[in-house]
Amino acid sequence: MKVLVVNCGSSSLKYQLFDMDRQACMARGNVERVGTAEAFIVHRPDGADKVRRDVEAADHEQAMKYVFECLVDPRIGVISDLAEISAIGHRVVHGGEKFAGSVLINGAVMQALEDCQDLAPLHNPPNIMGIEACRRLMPDLPMVGVFDTAFHQTMPKEAYLYGLGYDMYTKYGVRRYGFHGTSHRYVSARAAEILGRPVEELCTVTCHLGNGSSLAAVKHGESIDTSMGFTPLEGLVMGTRSGDIDPAIVSFLCEKLGRSASEVVLGYLNKSSGVLGLSGGLSNDFRDLEQAAGRGHELAKLALDVFAYRVVKYIGAYAAAMGQLDVIVFTAGVGENSAEMRARICSRLSGFGISIDPEKNNVRGSEQIISTPTSRATVMVVPTNEEAMIARDTAEIVSRLGARS
Ligand code: ADP
Image (cartoon, rainbow, N blue to C red):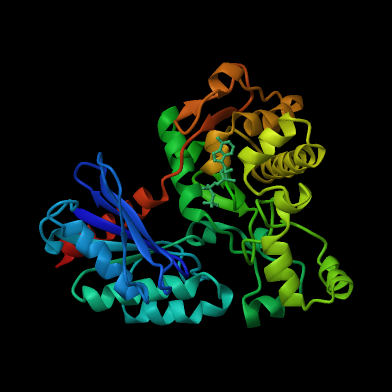
């Protein structure tokens, strides 16, 4: 079975075609600057060089046409007929409380997605556009929605409610939802697999550390808490996001900066804060910050320390929430690649008997246990693979469909 995975942003469309029988990615690519005159597609068949073409993609539907064209192109394509594709899996950011797992997309699901729009006004509209484009182009193809929020729907009320009036939750859905769920689900399950232990036995903290970062407390295979909340702004200090702050700072900054609340939240707290802001505007890229800190740049070092401290604080909180801590998993851009950041974080956990081996920690982007044999928790690097997870869910749902018909 071949499954196409699609991930639409406001001006981008990323895709990967999987051969599920071989569990292999056949081709991947992205269309950038969708909706502008400078749109282009970059397509890379597995094991071959990437190809870049300028395209006319005024919207996601036109962009999708180029994706299909590339996939069947006699020179750079990887299939001879679009009919070889059995299903499309779509990444959807916000499923609200309606989706605790991946679903086959139908009219009712589309309506439920529309209903979630005001919870994720930045992310869901492009996801919906992508689904609609594919449905128009391939009306008979089964499509599956895989939600960033779904894995965290197992959080208990005590973890997902804010200390606000209960009616804010019942009337407006103000609660913690969490994001990066597909990644937390994938790496927690993969870590258990690598360790040869059933997930049902493990209490794991998964650290998805990238430009956007979140932690999850995964107890016996279920997310019981996660650091992002109503929006991805809550929790860790991130590349450009502030993470947790005293909410009173918003109105204080509105006055001081002469800006509206939405300008402060969507602009300042989301785009100009985090390690970018802390480093005095130097960079939100952890490679730049690590290099600058190495040269003695004080604010770069401070930004990295604040970032690591917040991660450590959440690991401690989640160990307490789960009552046990067996595994810590590092994943995503920083978690997979930065031995320095992993060391910065783990050195602060030595008081709890957690220790990593510097030689084993010297790894980039591959699966590895980095803790010492005597460490009280196993510390691991597990590269995330959200696309493979989306493909797997899609294939599973579509196979069940076939079995029923
Ligand atoms: P997102 O998906 O949220 O955009 P990623 O998971 O791709 O983010 O992570 C991007 C981050 O990973 C960047 O800040 C980048 O600096 C960081 N990163 C990538 N490689 C390294 C490395 N070798 N050392 C430190 N940081 C790295």
